[in-house]
Length: 249
Image (cartoon, rainbow, N blue to C red; front, side):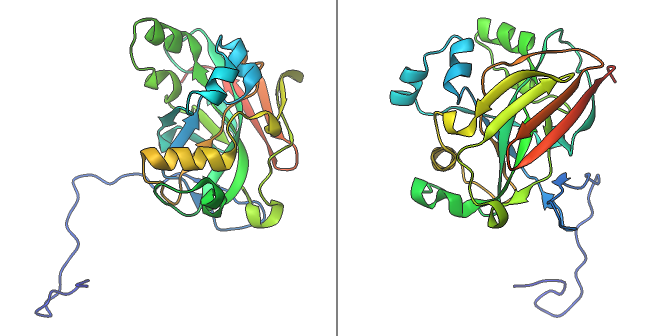
């Protein structure tokens, strides 16, 4: 491989760039100094039966007939560790969705479900913030609803806990409270599609890469947020995350 010198031995400089891009966002790893860089954020929709019902969808049909469907957020939507989140523009209906976040330390394509957990680095808790009115209007017009999900600061996420410490949790209470009042209260065991199944299915669509972050769906109880609200998402035995909704930027 030719590196800093050409085949003739003369020095080669790196090509100049028109602009310099910001560093890749990253998440803290509990108890570690080294951080986990996040490349892409993938999310699965309606992965808890009760949430599917509140969104007027049939969970039995979804489990038996329909494969999971995915959408994405840019890595720039990440809010590492939580904290202040400005109320987003062009919406009057911002919703919270507490989710298990799965960080991939390895990549792969067409990964078998029984091999999928070998890609996982660790776990955290995230919030899939959603401009629900924007999403509903886009759906009613048959348009994509990417900007209902992928706006700035729409993906707060806690620190990560490596699976080498906690294994691969398939059950555990997942909650979201707003100003101290419980809104969402479910269990990871209620997921329609398990983490290995989600990884396997997503790897059929795209090649998974190290640094990918997968949000795995939310239990019932999603609801609106207002400026001044304090949201805490928590998953038993994994992590907690606190976000304060501030005035629009």
